[in-house]
Amino acid sequence: MKWKKLGKIFNPLDHQLPNNCLEFAQSPQVLTFDDFVRVYFSTREKDASGKFISHVAFVEFDKTFSQIKKISDRTIIPMGALGCYDEHGIFPFNVLREEEKILGFIGGWNRRVSVDIETSIGLSISNDNGLTFKRIGDGPVLSPTLNEPFLVGDPFVLKIDNKFHMWYIYGVRWIQNPNKDVKERVYKIGHAVSFDAINWIKTDRQIINDKLNDDECQALPSVVFHNNRYHMVFCYRQAIGFRENSKDAYRLGYATSTDGLLWTRNDDIIGIEGTAGEWDSDMMCYPHICKVDGKIYLLYNGNNFGRYGFGAAVLEEN
Image (cartoon, rainbow, N blue to C red):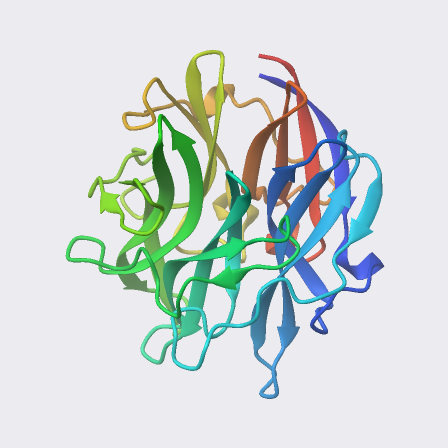
């Protein structure tokens, strides 16, 4: 593939965001309208104890992602209730049109003690064209099970032949970091189907093979249907050292499928890398691939896990 980079198109430090959020614009997710595109993302504020909590915000662009038209000025969806799966925030927030409504799939997270985090996936619905969302309940619609014991998150949903397909991640183990006293997570990409977006049946297996090693961490699957084939872009990294060494940090992966179930991985042909000295030089993560007016766009975060915004690229040659 040949991509034309559009550069960093949104920096949260340049704008006033709702909910006292100052930094981070992570996991951009596109919703297309007739004359603009809305990009939902996760941003952060600090609570009374100085710890981060994640909120959802959005920015609207023209349909070439070259001009900002509007930024959200209100709470899109409130924080999760006390003790619930999304008590401490939402990351990511995936959106999908369904008739007259817009579904918002919640990547909810909450803090733990023995490890730092647990995640599950919930569902919310918007009846005002995506300006605000309301949860269908306080609990998740997809959560840990016997063979996926923790860290179920990063939802991405498409509707195919009257059936919802979700690609997501699930944890397989926690490991001790040998260089410091922290536990690191290992997670893979999975798949589930549903007829109502509430009751899901898991494929119950890893669908993208490992490239680095058994402890490869795979995140944020994003899928588009183009030229009679499904195309997935995701990110992956080493389980240890990814914060300190750019060679171990997130990079983009790619896979194709004819049915959305069986995937062939081929990272070598994705054709986009970070640019030395630029905002994406050390890391490319949390991608979102989408089709707007017949063109394929790729939105993604760069260095520091999206602390200073996200960028975009447009596919020039397939």
